[in-house]
Image (cartoon, rainbow, N blue to C red; front, side):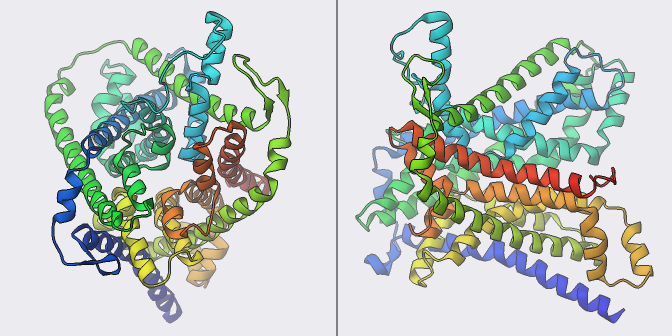
Length: 576
């Protein structure tokens, strides 16, 4: 019994360490950005606190348009992604739970569900690069239109990428954020017994889609509010996708901050810090606006929820199917375009397919690819291992102490996702330079861990908590210690969720651009940083090589996560 208590006490240390790992860099980073924003940066001549930096910042001619573009693109992308995700979740629930479902697209909806979920593993930059190859004036889509309908000999004069309104940026964000929100919704449905409510609604004469909107949506939305806020914060502060798809004159605020930071004039660091604080204010203001809008929409549609009107769901089902098919087709065609360009030697416009195929592009960059891929693997694997150790320890502490994560702890877990990366990572970089930690491998892994840890926890927490309590109780009655129960009972039973969480965490690590730039200090290059840097060039073949490999790594990790348990437990159907 004493050994059990000591083991549980050790687990509580891991939980405090996890909270410290999340809170310390964020608090330090915010302070590190706050003081230079108000003129205090002794190393480059700022010795007094004042608001002169903000006065000069507000005089920048590009700032107003950048702020408007940031707010418009961030809120619009989040709203569209949420609407798509809710509509798809409603139809997937109808197909899965409803015994009275008569949809024409039942089998196609199930196939679409299997196709949308793996898109979560694709990094944002890889999807954005593929989308450029698809919708650019000389892209694959225009080539098909020219070949089948128009017969254009030269690309049309269209601004389909990096347009002034940021529409292509919004489209790219929607492609990536819709599958993530859909997964969060589907994971939350079992917590509210969605199947029972759906059957009750249908027994009262409502269609399945209306039943979902009236009975399930009001209950499931509070459960996904934090993921929605995370998507909104990310959309407002994203850098890599904005560099690839967003406008350039002027760009979004996050890209403008990065430009000021890269300026050889060190005094521009003051502007970068002030811009980072401004971006934090915009993000917090947008989150508050979204919360107020939730209240307004709820009060506006309260009467609709209880008006008793019935109706057919056929038109809604058709519209949702078309939108889902459009999203998944666009995403996979974007990735296919990356693969084709990486294997093309000559692909002139308006040919639909390359005239000459070759592996020369891969061979020419093989040496640099090996080094970059190895750095990506090392950082990703080490980060995932650390995240799994911390998350498993936290979940074990939760179960042994019967102390479930509070709402405050969940908000702390989401904190790195709710605060703009450019804000606190800039402060972390300033402090790292001061303490001579800039450009170290340790800081690089720590910066990735900040974003990998929340996703690993969110993926693993639900399966871990739902494991039948009788298994560890029986093992404890037979004299097993907590460590023996963990390694000989729980981990084998939860191998598949563990590997899936590891694969998602690895995908998050591969996708990190700004943490690698800030923490790596130019000494470490990953597939994401290289792909984004090559995106500014004109050689689509090189972009295709790095972009496709960047997308391939997370897919392989997810494939292994699904295949290994199936092979190990091939004689045990419930474990595979």
